[in-house]
Image 1: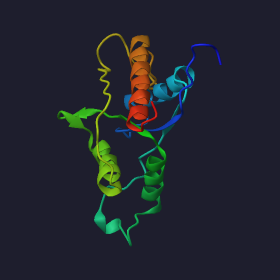
Image 2: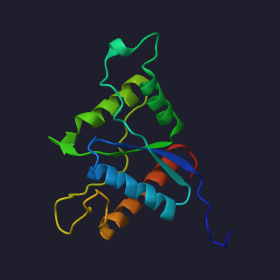
Image 3: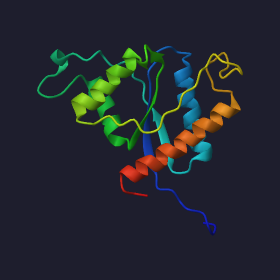
Length: 164
């Protein structure tokens, strides 16, 4: 290790999209975050977790304190993460119904408390073009802003865990 270089401790981040659409810009943001973390944020591992198989929450699905296997697998991924990265469209000044579904599973059924730490907003429809036809983030300025968010998320997570 070079003099003056600080090795960051590793954190695991679960990445969740609030959109189910295949070409979703929100999934594109998460793909960009995964790439940026690999390239530019040492010590951050981001795993995209597909929420499309999750059922809408229904307490009738709970049997003896457990839910269907797909919900339990999702819950385990969340428990293994140090932090959660949401990318969600805005609907009526709030997050999408899809995002609310997984927030409900995480917060209410797992005993977690919601704490919005770092926020990033991107208007995908204002020039310059932010995404290509496949939904990949191509705007360099947006990528730089996203990188700063990831670094802030890492620092915030480490601070909350007492691992500064």
